[in-house]
Length: 292
Image 1 (cartoon, rainbow, N blue to C red):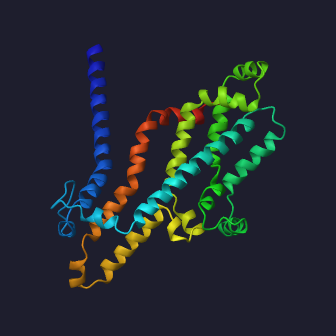
Image 2 (image 1 turned 90 degrees about the horizontal axis):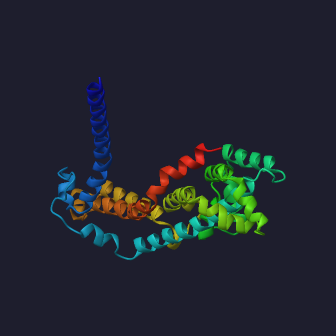
Image 3 (image 1 turned 45 degrees about the horizontal axis):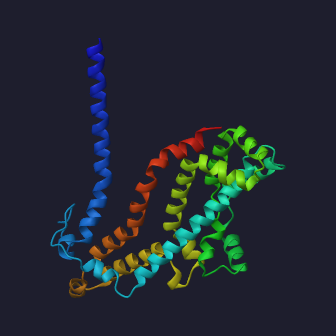
């Protein structure tokens, strides 16, 4: 009986690992193909000879990508938006979540109702645009930072987590003479590192992938983030390849390779950033979503 159960457990474990390996391979193949295409010559890509290893390796796509400095400028714009935006968003989310998690807050029920209603019924695009324009934020980085200072889902997750913390620790700090900000900084935040790091990851990814808000609110090309420049580049290359004659197409060096290189470079910051807080991710979101 024990032997049969042990064999079954081992067989199930093998099946689980085989399934996870298969899913991992399926997930990583497109990424490997993008890397290979970015380092390959254009002709093998057109002929469909590039899979997961570069054919006729070359750096021409990367050289063309950084000519003129437009891509670097967009990279810097995205870095500024991501850094400043994430700092503002985490600060505002913490300052909003802490009081809303206190049951003795006057009017807390009404405030929570407004938060939930805003999440279910977001503002219309036209009124939103007119509001941003009326306060003079158009064509500034703040146009894609301040209107998105608090993500409602992240706020609710943080409120739920704060409610799960022992009230006795806060009461002891108050008895020792700490005010609300001191309690938040010295007691609540150190106990909330996993969920805070998880929400930071959410905000970083959201800001780095900023696309539609940047299109709506930033018309100045020198201030547009990497995702908008990437879209314009791919569309431009696609249009050129569709309208070019056979001779012109042959002279267009590395259209497909250039697309792959631009996509890869835009993804690198997230690939570098994620491993540093990956250990907080699952634990943080589960703590914030399940506890009550």
